[in-house]
Image (cartoon, one colour):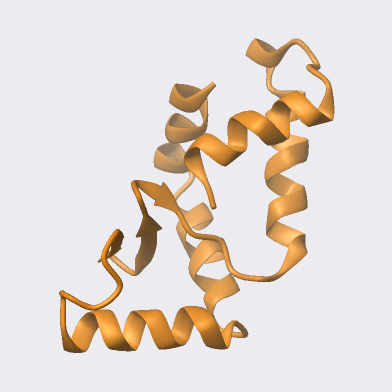
Length: 98
């Protein structure tokens, strides 16, 4: 599952645009990013790489629900998932995203 999501994001770089778009309306993420850029020691466990915020090696998604819902639908509908229950798809997504 993780490999499939990584492949989808790598094949479709617009996912990075969608992810970074969720940061625009999220003041907490803006604060973390600014403080992280000013001092890398701030916010341990967080990394700011290529415009994507990561927390403990998971991709941070902003507070918007739209992208999160799209990711759940995508994970649920993946051929390899064989239409797993939504809860299972969500659990697997939490491994990659936060």
